[in-house]
View (cartoon, rainbow, N blue to C red):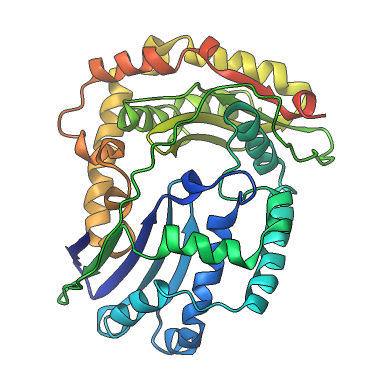
Length: 368
């Protein structure tokens, strides 16, 4: 599917999306989607000087659900490369030597990932609770992966894109292509599981990583995202005002719903000193168990208005705001913002945000 969107400015964006990603992986090739993302970028490395010359920014990323290659720049210059880029991205021409070298880079990225306390904690939790190795993969699999694995996975995942998103003021993108949406049937179960490989925890001093992890969520995704913002958007939000501003327990708080194919998991995460862990959990419990105090109609109206302003701003900078067209429709707050009500939000809150329904994790005690 080609999605052509009208840019409000002379800036253009071009996104080539491949659905599937880690949902297509299995034991032995955990991390291959991310490795392939790196390798496919080799196909157009001869254009890097042109990109710099014409001010074209580019990058790629891998999630649990898709691999995306994207390019942004002035419309007049970027349009010259779009058709060539699709041809290059969908034709694997990477040598075995390039594969071996890029694997070294990926393994260094893996090491860096697990050298970060919060990332190490969250990744180990994903493995323990959902048997999910995420885009970063598994070190053992990456070390033993073969060049032929990549050739085979390319045919499965990258031969045909799932969608192309073109944002341009004047040039529609037209291309006859066999698109593949990769309707993966994989589903995730909730553990904890003992038959998973965990990375050893590093010494981070007296600092603890703390997480609250929901069970698997099967619906209401856009409402959960809206509620996450009610709880954590800005210093006046319930989480920040009570935990940071009033008690000084943390610097930042993450509140994120992660899509895992047709399901999701909601994660609240932060870092604090060892001595404050119990007080931090007690404060989370106090907030989450008192929605009438913290999830007010006034707060609902504020967040709803914030979304409406955000969408006006995103329309102006549409070339770099495309998540609405990448994610499934039931993930988009934009699709419910006109009809969302406080009562509906509170019903969803009661389903997913009770403190006792979260899995509580402190990496200092859980992953010794």
